[in-house]
Amino acid sequence: MTPTVKPSPVRFYASLMIGVGLIALGIMLILLLKDSTPALQPDLSTIPVEVDYAAPELNLQDLSGKAVSLQDYAGRVVLVNLWATWCPPCKEEMPALQSFYEERQAQGFVLLGINQEETAEVVEPFVASYGLTFPIWLDENYLAQRLFNTSNLPSSFVIDRNGRVRLAWVGGVSEKFLERYVTKFIKE
Image 1 (spheres, rainbow, N blue to C red):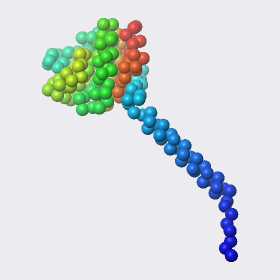
Image 2 (image 1 turned 90 degrees about the vertical axis):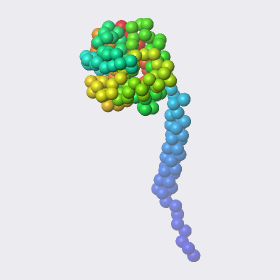
Image 3 (image 1 turned 45 degrees about the horizontal axis):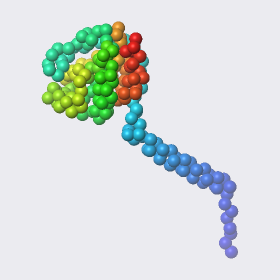
Image 4 (image 1 turned 135 degrees about the vertical axis):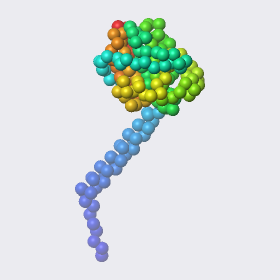
C-alpha cells in the first residue's frame, strides 16, 4: 500500500499566485505591444525641458554656401533643430516640423534645421524629398551640438524673442507637442 500525500495548502496557494501573476504579466505585455505602434500613437514625442539661458553665438553656412547666424533672427521665436539624414527619428519628425513652420512663420516664427556632419550633396536630396522649405544650415564639425551641449539627434531648442533658450528637446517632436509647448512663445 502506497501512502497518499496530501497537497500542502501553502504549495497550492503559491502555485495559484504564480499562475495569476503570469496571466497578468501576459495581459500587460499584449496591451503594451498593441498600443506601442507609431501608427496608433503618432504623438510619442519627448517632452521638452524648460531652460533659461542666453542663445549661443552660432555662425554657419546654409545649403547654398551663404554665411548665416542666429543673430540674423533676433526678435523672432526660433526653433533650432539638430538632425541628420541617416537618423530615423529625425526623418519621422520632419513632416511635423514642416507643417508647424508653414502654419506659424507669418507670426514671427522661424525653424532652423541644422544638419550635423553631412555635406550639401547629401542634404539637398533629403530636403527635396521631404519638401522642406524652412532654412537648412550645414554643420559638418558639430559646432551646434557643442554650443547647445548635446550629443543626441534629433535635438531641438526654442529661443524666445529676447534671445533666451527656453525649451530643450532630446528626441523626436510631434506637431501636437510643438503646438502645446512652442505656441505660447510665439504669442508672447
